[in-house]
Image 1: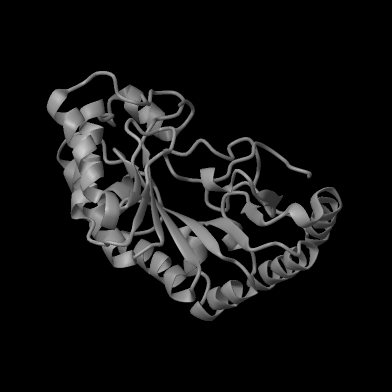
Image 2: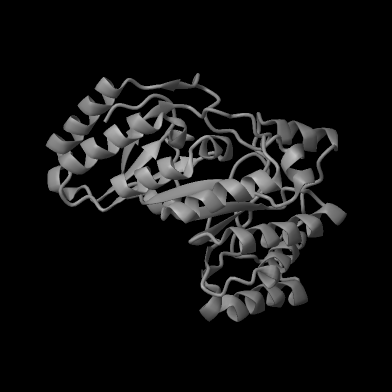
Length: 293
C-alpha cells in the first residue's frame, strides 16, 4: 500500500486494510490532537485510489474482509466519490463485509440523510465520531468547531441512516474542578440522546506540541489526578441509561480498562472503579502520563 504521513486508525481496525482516501484531516484544529500535523490536507485522486485497491487485490485477494478509510475524516469526501470508492472495494474483495471511517461532526452535518443512507446501502458499515464532550463550554474550549446540539445532530443522523456509530468521548477533557462533573454528566446526557452502537472512552493526555499541552504548562488547563479520572468515569457510567450500549474503555490512555455491555456489566464496571476509589490503591492497571502514552 502507498501511504503519506503517519498511520492512525481505531484499535478495532487493526486487522483492516487501510485505504488512504485523504491525506490529513479536513478540520485539524482541536487543541488536544497531535495527529496529522506533519502533512497538509488534500484529497487523493480517485485514479490513485483505484490503483491502490488493485494493488491490495493482487497482494491480499480474498483475505480482505475489513477496510478502514483514512485519514482523519474520509466522510468529508464528496458523496459520489465515496460511493465510487465503496463500489471499487466491494468489487475487488469478495469477502468484504465491513468498511469504516472516522467522521468529523462538520463533515457529517454537510451530508443529507439521503446521502448517508446511500453510503450505508453502498456498504459503509461503521463510523467513528469524536464526540469528546456533551458540554458546550468544553467543546468551545478545545475548539471542536460545533456545539453539543450540533454534535447530537451529527451522531443522530448517522444512527438514523443505519450506519453503526462508535461515539468516542474523552475523560478529563474539561480539566479539574467543577467543570469535571459538568463534563461527565452532560456527556452522558448526550450519549443517551444519540444512542450510538458503541461508546469508546479515552483519558485526556496532553501531548507535546499540542495547544492543550501548552495550556497545561502555562497553568491554563489543570490535568485530572488519577482518582479524579476514575471519579469522572464513574459519574459518566452512572448517568448513562442505555442498557444495551456496549462500552469499550480499553484504550491505552485509560488508567483502568473497562469493557462490556451496560446491561450485563455496568454494576461490575462501577464496582471495579469504586474499589480503587475506596482503597486509593496506587497500583492502577495502567498509568497515562503527560507527553505520550
